[in-house]
Image (tube, rainbow over all chains, first blue to last red; front, side):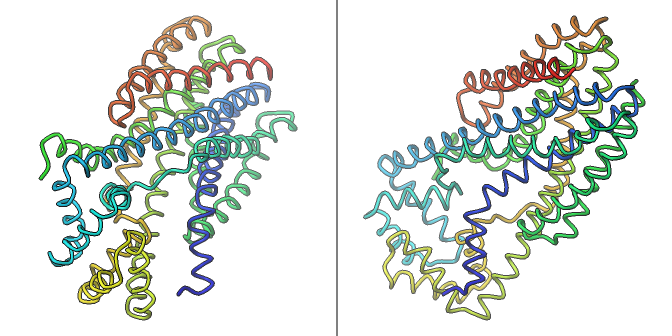
Length: 234
Length: 234
């Protein structure tokens, strides 16, 4: 029996993790790349309009690439699962001895004796559906993908990217010059990266403070390199 | 026993997949986002220098965000694995009854009888290391992460992003005007996306042609929306 903390840990692990993961994926890139691009351009252009244009184009491109890309990747995962499922279903009918040997291989890893293994194999033969489930999970390491997952995942990632990307761009909208826009953008984005990294650490189980600093360093480094490279090119 | 095709299938599945996965992650975004950003800007600026500056800044920012972000994510996975491993190691000593019940829960799913389960539990008690392995894999679904994986993954993703991102930018370097640069960029990038999508399909097990068309559609759509939005803003 598990205590309440364990149950909450499990719930966190299994229920919220997909959503959180998608928000983290979208927002960490959304906060970082448009921020760095805007910072890079602010050292080489004279008007904020151009920064907002490039930033807006980047957010559009990035959110579509990540959202639609994520959607198609999730769909591919689902198709991959279905095709492997059909393959296993066929194999336990067509080459049962081979599949029985595969069951044995799985459990030999855990030092089970041959009579224990044969007993498990006999049970699997009685329940072909469970046999297929066993092969899917323990041989191939595949979990059944959620049908609505692909679409929800795409929307969450794209929205998080857009929200994350608008934060570093907003200052350029309100400030008169690229350089003053950059100053405010650096301040609010580093604060946002810090808060985001802290919360991300809370959810992924690492130290929130460490995660907060790491997230700031990635964003800051990307912006600094983009700034330097833009100066070099222009 | 497995035939040669199966062995090759497995090798593909287990050996190449991490590398391929990283190349796919880096290159699909690298080909798409800098392409779309450059396309978006080409409708609003007069010189190719600005497109190359923004594109270069984007590639720098994107490759750092993805590469370093990927490195830290892999490190977090490894730390998560270690902390869960310690937790399981502690639990089989401190609350063995609870862990035995968890083993039973795993195998009840597969319709094993109580005597079969008790026999498995007895074997696990004799081999605590294997017991921990069993819990890690079958209860938590965690595989031991490769130690060198985090660094290699970061380098592969970042390099793939840079290589992918340079393809759509090159035409702007050689052509005199943004509009002629855009024409050549659209042609070579769609060809590159098509080839990349085809190869990606080959490796991920989906239809190569379908994957090729989908990859082109994501890239083309991102570029079209970025183009429209950039016109709207500027």
